[in-house]
Structures are given as structure tokens and as C-alpha cells.
Image 1: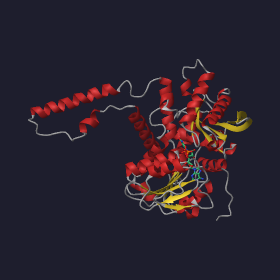
Image 2 (image 1 turned 120 degrees about the vertical axis):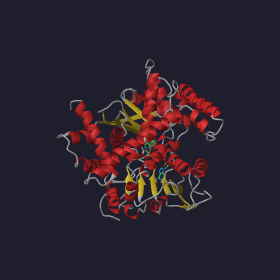
Image 3 (image 1 turned 60 degrees about the vertical axis):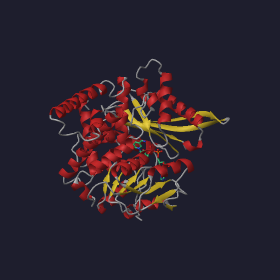
Image 4 (image 1 turned 90 degrees about the vertical axis):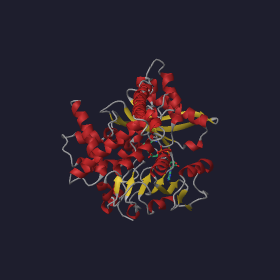
Length: 476
Ligand code: NAD
């Protein structure tokens, strides 16, 4: 245990920012302009529930408006506070810049445990919160566009979109006021899974480079790698599911609120998820070893650790006992600045949050564009693409006939080749491209500069440079 004190989440983000910015040559004063949070709005509002008035506290923080709208999720959790919302808003600025989503950074939160309320109560609370934000343009398709985060999902986003539309009856772009909506309310295919899918694409990209794997003391492929995941919510569940089902990775540990599960043979992610939905936690799950102190599992031997729950879980108190050679930050801020330093010195490679969980905002960007263009992706070109592919198949068939049927196509080639890309395929392709390009921009800095020894600093350098250029273009 270290005697050093742990900085707050926002201080942690600032410390990491400062470490990177020291290596840059920014015009005087710009560093501070980029770092500080522009504004945080605190709202306290009342909702009549169960025969009494209940007062709720919520926040919406705007970190940087170098691009508008600003973008960032809304979180429902009891621990929500101004410091946290501001840290998360800052991360959104850097994240959007890194993956070239044309937004500034924002974040919101409501101090509430959603599990304590009935669905109709949550709707009343969400609509009231949305009303308070929308009337101040803190929800607005061209100024501020929220999305889901911890404790919120499609359902809450649909309520927010509807509330905004009721208040702005002539706004033809009303649906673009929030992303992460259900498909039937203006959402986009692949958004629910997007952040977890992005974690998978990020790891695939990492495992394409021998040099990067070697930095973590790893080699080979994702296939067979042992993974421990903390938080089997939206992000953690999808990441674990795709990595085990599609890449052959072994999920050896799952950590939830009430404890952790461990199995060297690998856990069935779907079965664990179903158990949690039914029983409210992992305790009692039959096919694994249950550990009451779930956080102890963070320190277990594995190849990849995926913290996908909340911030600050890897900190000064446990960093030196973490054995994973590779950590991918699916959650925002799971590794504190102090722990980051300890882990770097140990040679652990950390794929930073601002990149690792950017899949959500990337697909949110696609959803926003879809809402503004009022047409589903692929609608115009899918059948035309299929017709062109049919031409090639027919021609191959004709040549085969002319040559006396001397060769044949592979069994599923025809079906696969004929299929034109629908919205889901296009979303996945756009997400994959984004995750690969962003990783490449980070690794180029990581490997080309002697003074950059980690991916997080590289990520900050790439994104701060982009934000600085935006300010410069604005004449600031
Ligand atoms: P979620 O609410 O769907 O899931 C969080 C999960 O973590 C739940 O299963 C919860 O039970 C578990 N959990 C909570 N406290 C825990 C604890 N102390 N120990 C172990 N498990 C715990 O939230 P989410 O949307 O998956 O978000 C998780 C993280 O990912 C957050 O940091 C969020 O900011 C980040 N994130 C989410 C998105 C998104 O699209 N949802 C995008 C980017 C980043």
C-alpha cells in the first residue's frame, strides 16, 4: 500500500493531460483553455412520486465547444457529482477528437439509483430532467446531444427524444437531439453493442502488431487469451460476448457488484448474463468458483484485464498487485493517475479509455447523421450493389459453362458475395475503420517519439493536437 494520496477523478484526468501537454509546443495559454471545463449546470428538480415530492440533483457539463454540438452520455448513479461529470466531459472532448467524431465534449449525470424506481417513475424523472436540460439548450440537435451511459439505455434515450420533440414541435431534426435510441424511435442498428464491439475491434487491431504485443510481453493471437472482465453491463457484456464467441478468447473471470466468478476453463458469458438478469447478481452461479470480494479478481493472473464498470477501480491500493500485462479501459477512468504510473513502470500496456470505449460515440455519430439525413444507411445502394454482384456471378457462371464446367465456386461464396451491405454491415464497417485508424494514429506517436512511452500519452498528444488545430482554425 502506498502512502501517496489518490487524486480525484477530474484531477487524475488533468494530471494525465498535463503529462502529455508538457511534450507539446502549444501557443501560450491554449493549454489551459483546452484543459478547463467551460461550464457545468446543476439542476435540482422535484417529481411527485408515491404521494410525496422527491427532489433530484442532476448535472450537465460542457467541457469544450471547439466543435458543436457537444456530445456525451447521461449517467444514472448515486455517486454522480460535479467532479465526476466534469472529468467525463473532458474525456469526451479528447475521445471525439481522437476518433474524428465532429463534436465537442460534454457529459451529464443524475444522482439516483435506477434500481430503486418503477419504470413509470423513472419515466417521470427522466422526462423532467430532460425538460430542465432542453429548455436551456443543454439537449439540442445542433448544440448538445446526450447518449446512454452507466444506468441508462435505449429506454431513457427514447423518453428524452420524445420529451424534446414535445417541446419543439416544429423541429424537423428533433430526433437528432439524443443518440442511443431504439431502432423504432430513430436509432441505428448496432448502437447498443457499439462500445463493446469497439473494445473487440481495438483488441483485434492491437493483436495485429507484433511490436505492440511484445511491449506487453504477449504474442500470438486473441484466440485462447485469458480475459477478466469487471462489470457485465452494456459494455462489458458485449465485449466479453464478442471476444469469446468470435475471437476464441477465454473469459476466465467476471466481476460484478456482489462478487466475482472465476473459471480457468472459461465462463459462458451468455449464461452468466442470464443468471444476473434473473438473480440480480453473480452469486450462486453454478459453473464457476465464486469470490465474495470481487475486486480481488482484478489481481488474478490473466492475459487481458477489461475494467468495464466504473472509475478508479485500479488505484494506489492495488496497482502493484495487478498481474495482467495488458489492460483495456472499457470503462471511463478505471485506472487512476497514480496507478497508471505504477503499472507503466511494471511494463503493463494500457489501451486508454478515450480510445478503447470510443465505439459508442462513433456509432452515435452515425446515428446523428442518419437522423439529420432522414434516411437509413444502405437504403439507396443495397439492391443496386446486389444487382452488380449478380452480374459478376452470372458472368462467372457463363464462363464456367463455356469451359465445360471445369471448376466451381466455393459453396458459400455466392451467398456471401451477393449480399449487399445493409445498415448493420455499414455501421460495423465504419466502426472498424474508425477504431483501426485511431489506433494507428496513437501507435505511430508511441513508436516514433522517444519521449512517449505509453499509449495514453500518445492518445492525448493526437487528440490535443486536433483540438488545438480547431481552435487555431477559429482564430483563437
Ligand atoms: P451499465 O450500467 O450497463 O453496466 C455497468 C455494470 O457494472 C453493471 O452490470 C453493474 O452491475 C456493474 N457494476 C457497477 N458497480 C460495480 C462494481 N463496484 N463492481 C463490479 N461491477 C460493478 O453501464 P455501461 O453503459 O456498460 O458503462 C460502463 C462503463 O463504460 C462506464 O464507465 C461508462 O462511462 C463507460 N462507457 C459506456 C458507454 C456506453 O455506450 N454505454 C460508452 C463509453 C463508455
